Image (cartoon, rainbow, N blue to C red):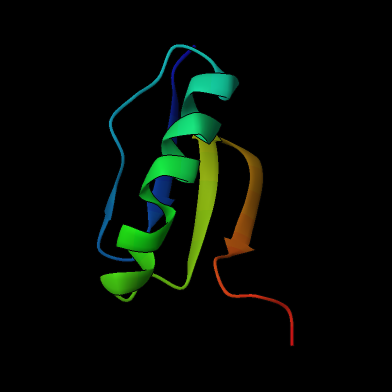
Length: 59
């Protein structure tokens, strides 16, 4: 089972487990915001694990 983040304009590389995927998001969070990404969805194969999840702080 491979995990990946999907967002407007692209998707991440595949990860072996959810923890690796979440660590990647933590590391790339600001870069995604700087590119104009508003939200991300974590996928495994063709199923949504969770999301879309906003990258912006709650108002």
